[in-house]
Amino acid sequence: MQVRALLLALLLLAIVLPLPTHGDMGDCSGAPPIRLAIGVTARTVLPNGTPLYANPGERFRRTATLRSGTVLYIVGGPTCSDSMQWWQILGVDGLRGWLPEGDTTVYRLEPWPVSIDIVKRSPDAIHVIRVKAEDGSGRTVTSIPIQPVSGSVRNVFPPSEWGPLEAAFNTALAQCPLILKRSDPIYASAQRIDDVSADSGAMDVYPSPDGMQVLAVRHLWRSLAACTSEALPVYGIDRLSLITAHAESTLFDVPANASSPPYQDRFPYQKQETAQTARSRIEGVWWSPDGQRVLLSIRYADFNDPTAPVFTYKVAVYDLRRGTLTDLGDGRAPAWNATGERVQWFRLIALRPGAPPDEILYTANPDGSDLRDVPLPAGISFIPYESDGQPFVTWDAPGERVMGCVQDNGGVCTAVASFDLVERQLSPLLPVDPLLQIKGYRRVIWINSGALLWLPADPNSATLYVQDVAKGRITPIHLKPAASSRLAVLDAVPFADGKSILVTLRDGTDALHYVIVNAETGQIIPVSGL
View (cartoon, rainbow, N blue to C red):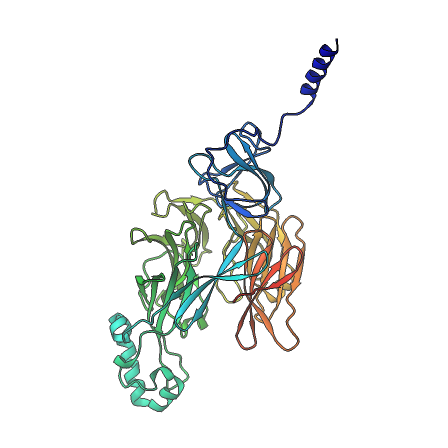
């Protein structure tokens, strides 16, 4: 009788108790070696997305599918289930669940410290420094030696560039040699064009995703100080190079006065932008997530346009493995998607002279195949013009949402909204802070899917503005400088943790300083190790 009662109690207990939620404690000997731990950050790596489960085990409910490259916090585990080691994760936006680290063939999660690489130049090297979000510590990842470009402008520049420069040089030497030599030290000892070095020392540097190599755009431009107040154009080339610790290889050159190729897009520029600047230049460089390709924006100027002076922009992809350059055609503001499998960009096309231009969004494979256009909602401009006349487009990190101006009041953007390329939906309107409407804003950046960061246009401002996407509420963060110094926000880049921001500040002596700002608490941490 007692045995029967005990069996009945056990049966009832089995019915009442829920299924186990922390794995089956099975055999995980075939799972890949564990590389994660509680408290670290990781990211998903499967190109087609990674399923998130309510509990550790593929028999449990799928709660979401995470895009490749999603950054997560490890908060629990490991637990063995289905021959895999499972970890409990917390997403940047509060999403919780369980993921296996990997199966017998591939890892699904990989360690991914939340960090940003910054570049510092010394006279003979490029230093890539990795800054961690958690404590603001900086560590040099690699130091890459750089050598000056050898040769005079005659040997390095194409004849279309050194020819006019030589004529202007000889004329200036004949008319006002003392003014030329005093006002431009480069030519202090030059008696002929062969004496002028092609290397101007100006360079933009873009570190690779792993920080072990850099792409450098060398601005090999030269100009002359005129005998009058008239500004003379620059001559030379933009040279894109891949630089490693062992060698530098030139990928291609863009002559500063290259002819504008045929185009439909029309981006008017202001008159002051034509003086002392290259008509043609490499304007932007973006590495693909796997570090195998480079996305480029190349700008041309057409001074001879019959209706109005314009800039035109070409989008191109350089394949580092094959050494090939693919021209994707007209376009501005390009971006990779999260996996690097697609490229997307905007076009601004004036179909009829004098008619308002149409904004069109295109997407394609990096080789130019499978070109598609994405229908855009009416009443929104995704290429708003800033105070300096240059358009800026705000993509989110996965390249699936883009910000645009919805309400324009006499050239001032008073409200914005985001467009989801996957869902093809427009978000509710977000008001722009009145102060930013009056003085203007330089950029608006995604911190995470629920928060935006606004940078004021005022070059002397030391204030950032964080906006809650759901509520529209804007919170200023004041970066108060020391009493004896002046600081201005030069740039800001969000970390992948969805809350930390690396802010670059410039003081009154043009020296750069770096701090990490927590967008949630307003805490400011100086970056060390620089």
